[in-house]
Structures are given as C-alpha cells and as structure tokens.
Figure 1 (cartoon, rainbow, N blue to C red):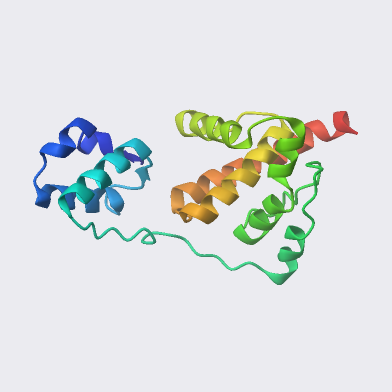
Figure 2: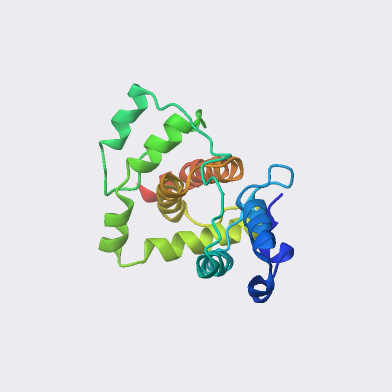
Length: 188
C-alpha cells in the first residue's frame, strides 16, 4: 500500500510545524515499514527540505533503507553491451529475475532511440508509470513498453530499488513479453 505524505501533512502546514514535528514527519515519510512504501511527491519533499534548511533542522532519513539489492550474473551482463537501437529484441519470457530484466532493459539504447524517433522518453515513461500506479496495468505497444522498461531500470538505478518498484518493473516486463508475443508477427 502506497502512502501519500500529503495525507500526513499538507504542504501549506509544513511551515507551522515545530522542529520536532518536522523531524518526526520527515523521518516518518522517509521510510515507514509499518505503512508501506511512500508515493514520491517531489513538491512535498522540496517544501519539507526547504523548511528544514531554513531552520537548520537535520533530517535523519536513510535514503537507502528498504532498498533491494540483487546479484547480476556474468552471463546476463553481456546483454548490456549490445546497446541496440532496435527495440525488437526478443525477451526471454521464461525469466523474470532481476539479473535478466536489468540486462535486457539496458541492452536497448533507449535515450538514443527516443532522440532519433523524436519523442521525450522521460515524459512518455512518466505518463505510463503514473497510469500504472492508478490502474495497476501497463498500457502501450511493444516499443512503448520496451522504452518504459529501459527508463524504469535507469530510474531505479538513480533512486534505489524498493519492493513496490520491483513489482512494478516485473509487471512491466510481463507486459513487454505479452506485447512482443502479440506484435512480433506484424512487425516482421
């Protein structure tokens, strides 16, 4: 279950909090294992951190707490070196482990593909992931989903992989596999 920090404290209320309340809410929204993952709200976190900076309040949030760490096999790592501009690489749908999904996602040069195709990859991926969090389903054709998989793996590399994000990526990978199976005949 995802928790929205605005349910705990609205942005407008942040300046009126005491220093102790800022620390409590900052720590609570940084990681709440009893309530589930935090739904990232950049505007809210920026407001909280600004208020803490103004008052010299130091939050003790551990951004790595709750992160998942997986091993990547040497066999799978060879995929990353492909960096293909062609998204139509068959996924191994018999696998749904981190090592393979990570390497398969990065075997595609997603940023270069988006640039050459004339679309904003970040915007596309953000729209799709927002839809996923609302509906629980990934929507799009194979190429769109393949681009999103590339972007989501890159996002997790920067933000840290957490359980709910990993489940979303596995779900996205399954959608990539389903779309590939459906569309491969029409592509060729």
